[in-house]
Image (cartoon, rainbow, N blue to C red; front, side):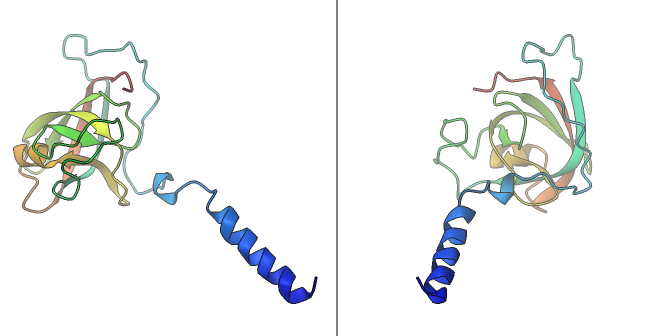
Length: 153
């Protein structure tokens, strides 16, 4: 086997093996977001209004391009519902989202994964984004308050 053939085989091996690495969209990056997330006790629920975890960051929303498609937990995405995507929270987790610019709040249920854009903490459904007037600018600084941990389903 000559040197040229070895180089070709090496290039194909590198290309083939590079497909085996995890997607970079799931990599954690230091984006300045307060990330004090810890794996929740799955049995923990909201006892008499107790907030289980609070985070702040920038939220966005997603709508038409995903409407009717399957979410990460297997249900069909309804852009008019009160749901959201988070990178780590278990599916079914209930989160109160407060727009820090106008203090409007909405409670959402986590049913999808995301956001995949650097510097974002949560993607809201269109319906949830409307509730807190996030539509005009497309993003807003928000506070997330976990009210109840989901069971992951």
